[in-house]
Image (cartoon, rainbow, N blue to C red; front, side, top):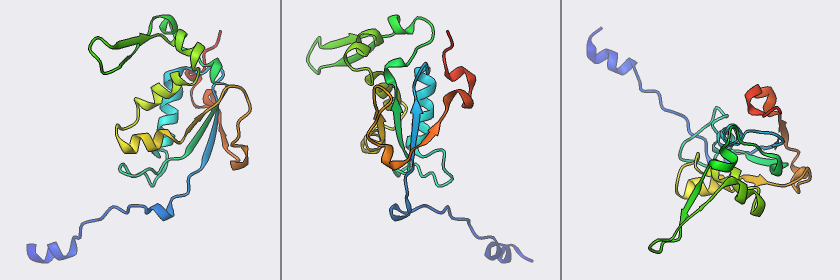
Length: 165
């Protein structure tokens, strides 16, 4: 065979992309009791982006919904709870604001995890859409029990995911 005949036999393989109509998002439930913030955020961001599926497409919102309960019992390792700083800027000159997880937990306990997950998602419209699939609640009860979420046990994924006192 000559080279021209080989080019006919070798065809490029095209990647199959899933369509919006073929998407069927699942629901997952995670108990954040004694969970380490960063490790919990990585598990959540992978599920929200859809990286745990074989049909992952980077430019589509193909992820699943995640319900996190008992957010008030989330933990940091080391002295990060007192020493870590979150910064935001108002847009005005000299308008930089700083807060710690200690202060943030008093006002909005779910905001700590939401910020950690937000920084692991792409910026822009797609990232904001994916972040809306994260539902955070204090306590054991949540209004999404009708979706029959699958329970993910963090300590079974890796024993470092949970802080033991």
